Length: 115
Image 1: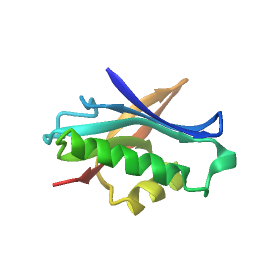
Image 2 (image 1 turned 90 degrees about the vertical axis):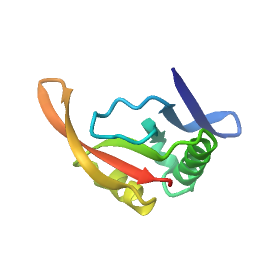
Image 3 (image 1 turned 180 degrees about the vertical axis):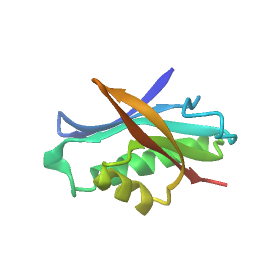
Image 4 (image 1 turned 135 degrees about the vertical axis):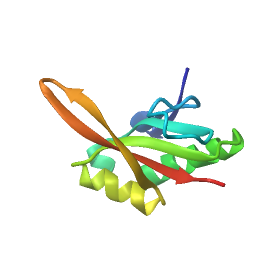
């Protein structure tokens, strides 16, 4: 089951976070973790604090659900996203492959400890 946090500008959806209380990023994550499956903000809304609001709401939900950490997978070459997550205290704890068309790419698995 997924949970969604959605950001609107008036009636226009400008970003969302897709979350799961049952992370599926790997057996090496031993803590009770909330997974950020997707976090997207429309390009026109970058640098307008939409991502910040989505992340604040995500962390608040994780704490409410008594999670020990928040985890996510991010493409290693998505430097903007990696920098955003590092700013929020996420650290790289591993990698896993993902298939995109005919290519096999690498996601970083990142975690922010809450306790």
